[in-house]
Length: 253
Ligand code: OAD
Image (cartoon, rainbow, N blue to C red; front, side, top):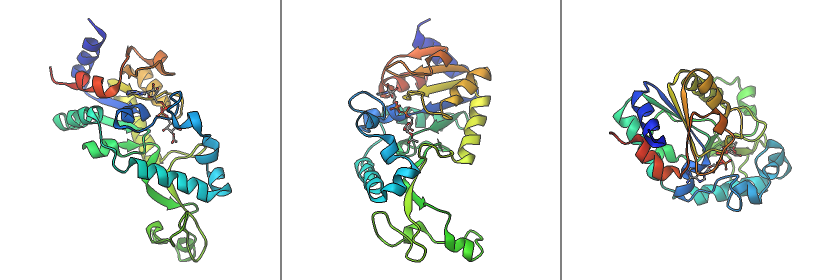
């Protein structure tokens, strides 16, 4: 049996499928990846200058402007055939597929996927740098200021306590959102098949989910045009771009 046929058989047989995606799944929507040579974001810029809390404290305007530019670049990005194939599978098979993504571009959601576990946050959302001081002062109860109502600026700020608004993405050294991570661990630990799509597999804890799935008895399929750090955890590798191969993998027989 060929590689694709084997993977398609596992898709048909699996009661529960977990899909772990990375930047590569959006590459064919024109979104740059992080580590591809030449075109990857981290091929030209240093994460420690742009994607850490320390960098933001050092130079809030530079980091804010960079994220503002990324928002601008991504605003009109459209899901590709890979995102669509995943969303259509979810619609045809309610409850069978959980999408876990490291991407912050919302393209799975735009394609119509539901219950997406966004491990690294959302590029289009903001939050305060510190817990809102006003909510502490005034007793909290879910109160506090809304970052959307901050004074305009680069970045916007709180006129009273000078708190800064930052993008609601996970920076290096930060913890992942607890709810999304524990739901992702549950999905990885209980699935029969994990598809690892468009990720280099070098960033943890996300990459650890593929090992968790394998150790829990799931079949693991890596879909990526290049070798990845998760290839050893895979039973099968499909070498190719996801917008081309996901529709073939997930189409009905
Ligand atoms: P990377 O840039 O590390 O990896 C992208 C992967 O996509 C590579 O393995 C490419 O070979 C693959 N790829 C390229 N084109 C593809 C295509 N058309 N179809 C399928 N795969 C393709 O991106 P991630 O693994 O997502 O973290 O990086 C993980 C995290 O590191 C990101 O979430 C981000 C980054 O720093 C945060 O922002 C916290």
